[in-house]
Length: 224
Image 1 (cartoon, one colour):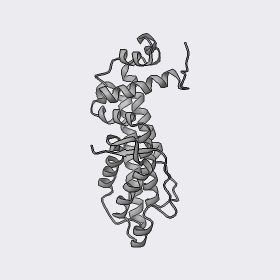
Image 2 (cartoon, rainbow, N blue to C red):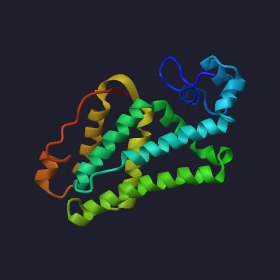
Image 3 (cartoon, rainbow, N blue to C red):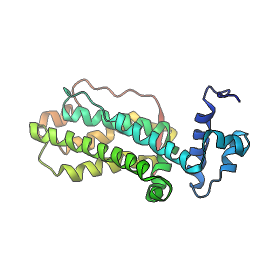
Image 4 (cartoon, rainbow, N blue to C red):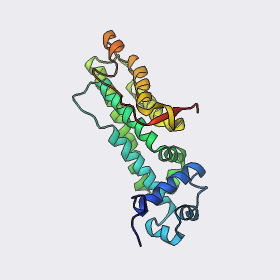
């Protein structure tokens, strides 16, 4: 049995990618293992060789999304709080733009994962979500403590930031007039100009000195 496909992906990776697209379009409940097998041109028994259940496919989607989000928040501890938030935003939006279906599945199926995942699997996902929240909150608190930011409720702002960035899967689209990086600049500038104390910094370099957002992936902004 071949472990690789013509596009260079392993068979398991191909199954995961196809299932992600199907779950995003039809929902987890609306997708059968037969649908996944048909989409990759395999029989269902072969699909079960790689994934013993549909819930294991969903968990791999969730784990990949959760791990990516935590990894995207790794930062340079010597950077300013505003630079850190900008780079968080850029990495998150670019990553979501590159795999919109995975983000869609994550949020669409979120209310139901306790029905399909084991306690250990749910705990893993919740732990990653908590890490994301705490990391963002701690950067905001660092900016407040250093005097870089105005005093604010970092708990509320962190939750709002997470919703603003991770919820962008609803309207990010390929091949549009704006890039993910450009949108990250817009988001970050609007947020940081409400936080930065120093008027000169707030006006001239809200994202950090010398930061230049590259232009790569095209993204269309559409209303939700």
